[in-house]
Length: 300
Image 1: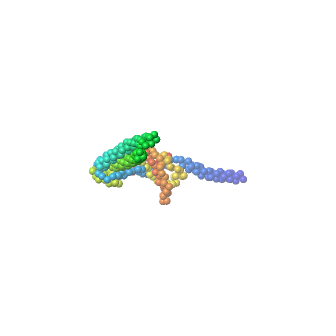
Image 2 (image 1 turned 180 degrees about the vertical axis):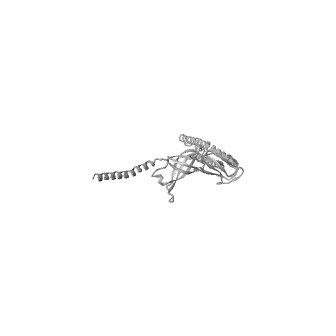
Image 3 (image 1 turned 120 degrees about the vertical axis):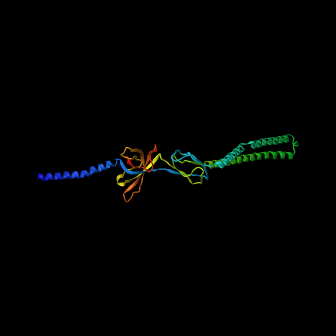
């Protein structure tokens, strides 16, 4: 009987251990979700590259950059011949200045108002004289003075309308000046990004047309590391914005580390290998990291 009880107790203990073991493993698995993930053989690519086009037709007269130069956004890269455009701009500026002076000139309006005052004063004196001396001024003369006063009032309205027209003409000339200035600016080839000139397609003296690529720029101060990760390793993790370390030549004397963060986890899963794409934006202030490099990515 004692041996039977001992056997039952031993079986119960072993069964308890067998049940407890999976629970301990599940806890380890939960803890492992906070461990760093490593993705080997990620590819470094550019995030932003631009093919800078010409915006006007003409001859390229001045090339300001060469391959390998680092430039800032808005920097002048090349110049298209703009002599005619500058002359048209100068003409538009002079026409605007003339129209502006005309719009600001109020001599006609002030003269019309003064004439109206004088005409009203003469009319009033005539009326006062008739009240004192009824036959001192004829009916014809009184009508003439009345007409002169009304004409002066209409001249004020005419001068006011002409002043409004002159202001509108000045605005039209201002608009024409801005169009001419834009034509000059469009003959400048400027950089839309901070980056490096990696390829020049058009040289000084060659003819360009709108839309033709003059040169190609790469933005290198921030690059992208692209890799694949197995879905089973994600384990309900949210990788978006997680900090990462990119290792170039890991385990060697030439090892380099770059900081960044996860910017994209693809929602698409490859049905064959059960993998998904992961992108990380990597800071590259010293431009030591190059597009095309292969590296390892450690997700914190």
